[in-house]
Length: 53
Image (tube, rainbow, N blue to C red):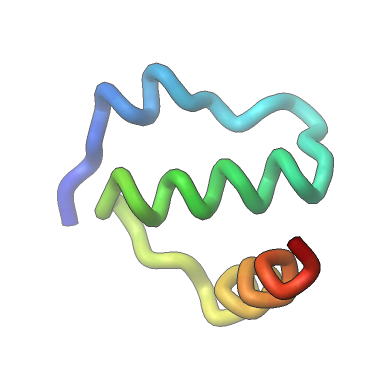
């Protein structure tokens, strides 16, 4: 697993993020960085969020 330091520096998770901000951050993170895999719970939340869009 490798971290995309540049992406992380440019894309900080906001303090007290809304659900939309949180989901968008995690989606972007999954596309741009391989530092860790999302949990099953998070994947389910992302799938539900994407279904609502």
